[in-house]
Amino acid sequence: MLEKPRECSKCHANFCQQCITDARVNHEYNKCPRCEDHDYEVIDVHPFVLRKLSELKVSCENKEKGCNEKILYEKVNEHRFECPFAQLRCSNYGCSEEFLRQDSVGHEKKCDFKVAKCEKCDTTLAKKEEAHDCIVSLKNRLERMELEMVSLSKKVEYRSE
Image 1 (tube, one colour):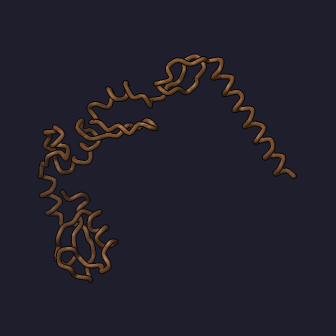
Image 2 (spheres, one colour):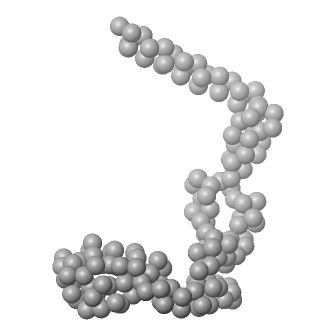
């Protein structure tokens, strides 16, 4: 499918903007992939091509995963960000699970790498650390802050000398 369609100024072949940009950058000789002319420019496609593309309905790229949607050409990118069958990767640090968008809520509930804040002491906890001692957590946080304060004081002293 043509994404951001562009055209060769010599042979009028149509290319995706990214494809023709890659072809120009990655080839030793800067020539059109179709007509192999060296003296060409990448130009906007003819309005007729844009009009015909806008009339097209295309299958979702996630058809093999179960999406049966037929999408207007100009709505394809919009659908990509909404399709329940799109493959996603968990955004929780340390988790490498992949799942369909429609299964993301279920994964988020069970992900061992999900972080949460303790309602009492505001300590950040991984889901697998559900139980913790607020007093110990607050004591550790205070110790880290004191060390950081000493370190910053030394930096200020050093710079003022």
